[in-house]
Image 1 (cartoon, rainbow over the protein chains, first blue to last red):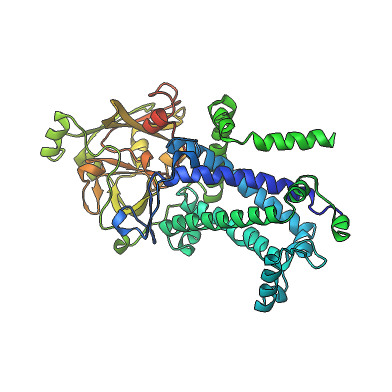
Image 2 (image 1 turned 45 degrees about the vertical axis):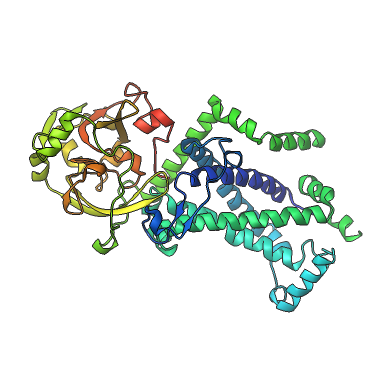
Length: 227
Length: 249
């Protein structure tokens, strides 16, 4: 059996590409009004809970310049790719049991003793999954990404859209108002960036070429088990 | 065979570098992809929300302490200063284009029509929001009075203000034109609209971003196509900065 299924691999790279476009165009959009508020309204920097740095041109899309309209073009195009791919990934993972087999955590995984043990073996450079393809920490992290962080980007993004709001005003209320939803969109962005940083580091310290190649070609669970 | 596929996958990923992004964005294919994404957003929002569903309305105590002015903050002509000084007694709103009975309405005419008052949130494309109470007649009422011809597909708003030496204008389709919250506001928070917010008349298009809400309104025009107006993209910011014509997201 392949270590990573075809849909997982396609989703992984498509999602990575969409997230990079969303992130870089999002930084350009953030430069348009660099203040974050809680509640329904907010326009006065004096009321902001956070004043955001101006992101330099080399971090943004379009590259090297402030262009809100073009950034919004990229953002609304990549949003479709990101949201539809996430939906397909969830439906497939539930249907083909990828979720229950590889990602679902047990109560044991969440116990402080288990988490401490996992951290100790990570520090010692051991990342084995005890017979599964992912260890407890990985399952928790991937589950939080797929189940909370990534969907929250979709929900907070929808909640900022005035044309979507009449369809689900409760969503905006649930998130604490439009400016709160906008703040949460920003906060979850950086939570995903934090995941991305740890993810890249973990790949680098654990046989990076095999890891990347397996996520392209699929790899083999049997070969991994005999390692 | 699979190697070729793998290679093209890697090449595809590599092509997402920023240089390639600029090439995509500037190509006809890139622009049509962006336009398709915009169309999908519009259709999805209209399907999910329906044509007539209202934007949320707020209680008086939810209003923001001030209502930020943005874009044009005045009209820099002696005529406008004179109008402002005499309370816009001579301001006229023309309703024309593809209509059977063109209108020319005074402020008193507009105040005499049935009024709608709504406390709504105004979302700027930049990201900020303000909440205010707007009062005015519904656009649908004026369009019915003027008897819009069936070949009209869009309503264009003509404005007194200019930016970068161009006349500001905006446009919406007939769905938003006949939406109950689409009003020609002459009051903000119970008082005549302040200069910075578009005195004396400002459109409210509550399910779209702020740049659609034309200020300093002088004319309403029913048209079949937007091609021959301005640069043909349907609005000032659409023409000048390539902003999205549908501003529901």
